[in-house]
Image (tube, rainbow, N blue to C red; front, side):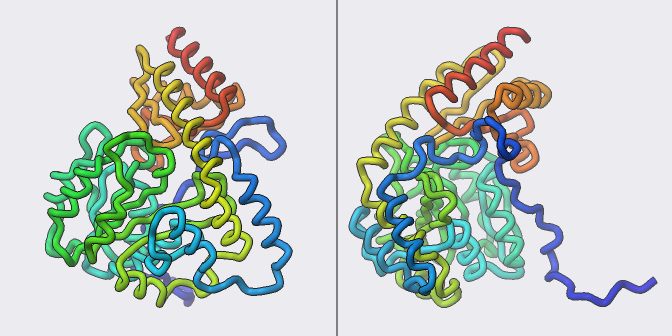
Length: 364
């Protein structure tokens, strides 16, 4: 029997496993979602007001380059707005980078437990992903450099990393870059930069400014604007020019642009968000560190908890769900069958999670 005549996807597309988002509770339930690394304090009130204002202008196209948003980002972060490209979430920009700099026969290097979107966008561009083993759930610079071949065109680095929460110091990121050929693009994905408290961390702006082969990608999703889908990228002129040639002409909607600009300038809210996260991230880490649980030190707005077996991890997920807390299982997406990723939430949520897991730990 002959195959039906129909459009056929490009080679490799049907081999891609789709991205698995964090689970939510059933509609109308009272469950607390701690599976998607969303802001523990919601959105900036100033961002909400700005979005409401933008929603009154839904009949007009947004300004195509996200100028208002780029100017706010430039003002607060000390960046030339012309070096910034905004996108429909940082995923949009990562897709564009892969589409622009990867193709058939190329390779992209990433650490084993790096963000699960990297293999998707690499394969979608027709290239091959090269997974590099980590050292205790942390990217290994020497191993990453050893994996580079003449076919390598991109290195993806989430810093801090999702789902582990680990990070590379500024010196280690510079060492990684120094070991790469100038024709290899280093993409530093700083999705969780707003939450980092480590003294030796840097977002990499100096590295971007001084080189032609580094970009920094950021997001508003972890800052209370996940639903708005806003991401931004800083890069050298030639990369900004290339990305602007293929991105959608109105890829960030008007309410999102206005909300993002207001959120950027609301530095008081952002400081409060960082302080809350640091307090309860460190508290939860200390509370859970025990006999059958290990919390990997995190610089993000979540912690990864490792159990002695995958069965124990599944039981912990079920116990939390029964108590009304939905966390992230990371076996299917990342191959860490004995781990759970728990977003930092309210004080009550963190105390509730700790009570459930500590009670379970004591009964086993």
